[in-house]
Image 1 (tube, rainbow, N blue to C red):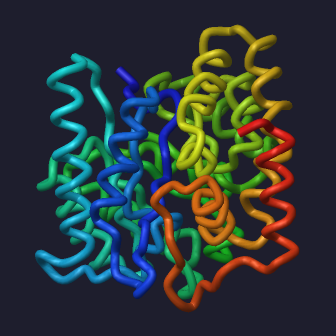
Image 2: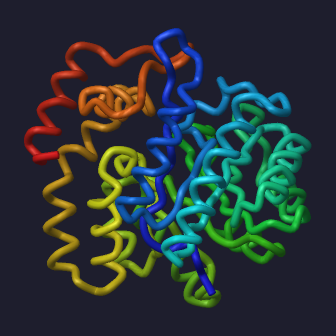
Length: 304
């Protein structure tokens, strides 16, 4: 059974004004997500500014993991609802990616999100061997394909090979190409229905679900989890009239939330809405004044 369906939030890491992690704010954000009906959580991904977080045992990353599972387990107990947690576990060092997957498994995560190795520019065989290594850990793996950040697209023929490895549970498709997403559905999901195909772009949630995909790992849902859940749920239920209404209502915000980078833009939007967010850590800086106006205008236009 595929538990990776619906709207999953790629969670931000809120910071205090001095640049330390706002753990209380993070806990508030997790509770807000759960109360608003989100289908799953994805901490320690790109949107979390994970490359800038302290990963030493017992430090920032471990505390974030602890808070997520503490709140999720409590919520599951009282609500009777299963909330899958996909823990970020990517690295361009295969040995580190394996260690992050082992950490995710030990923490009780439902899957690990593993990005294509970036910067090193491995060959197709190198990418395959990277995923072969993490697949041996014994935790479901969601492959994260995002050429815009890694410099490498995983073409469909390679994804087909990777999907045949043990424990490869799905893909977060952020290639930006609906055609490629449909190829993945046609060549993998149609043969293996439990293989999850999730959009990595909020604006492509509706077309991906309409094409037979499973949902979204969302940035927008940091601020609007209920609406993103409703959008995905309507599409998955076949209510495309409702899904279109939500999609077109939110379209200006989907554009604005990346107008000056990520997570810089969504963090500004959340600060504007007085939600736990705060500044980003270097090398990310606050959005420009022009971007602030764009984000504020989109929030008003979408009535958020």
